[in-house]
Amino acid sequence: MSEYLDLIFLGLVVVLILMRLNNVLGTRPPKVEIKILNKKEFENFYQTVKGEIESEEKLEMAKIAQTKADKILMQIPGFNKSDFLKRAAKAFEMILSAFASNDTKTLEMLVAPDLYQKFENIINERQMQNMTAETDLIKIDEMSIEDAKISAKGIAKIVVKFITDQINVLKNQKGVVIEGDENFVQKITDVWTFEKDLGAVSNIWLLTSTKKK
Image (cartoon, rainbow, N blue to C red):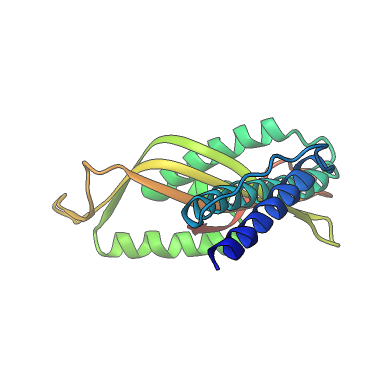
């Protein structure tokens, strides 16, 4: 019975090797090394090959998604990806700071009306309760364009993911921290959507939505 099991394991190993090579190279090798494996060796080999295949599939899907976004971005007149990301990083820093310091004028310039109203409501509520917010953006670890769309009305939307290190605290009127920790650096992932009317004269991308992951 064990001999039959070994043959089954061997058959599965050969199939896996051929499938993987065919996926990666698009062809089969002229010669395949055949080796009899016991059950434990086969399980280890199977898990290794399975992990490599899954990693390759995830990488390929990421490339496809990035290509789709890039194709949309190419349709935006004068769009420069590097320049946009630099401006998005600056906007991220300015909006965080303005929201924490109750700077509604800056927010009004950078945030779309619907989202601005939500920010203003939170600011007003903090002020009514005599609370102050403090945000210290330590650094932006990573940022990338996750998606891009252009509507039938010519509205372009770009979704950007920010991974940052921040310190966020909320204090009462006596300056006592009631939320957060001044000594704790948080690793935060934000997904922001910026929007621009391609037919408008203004070159400003307004923030239309925010969410955390």
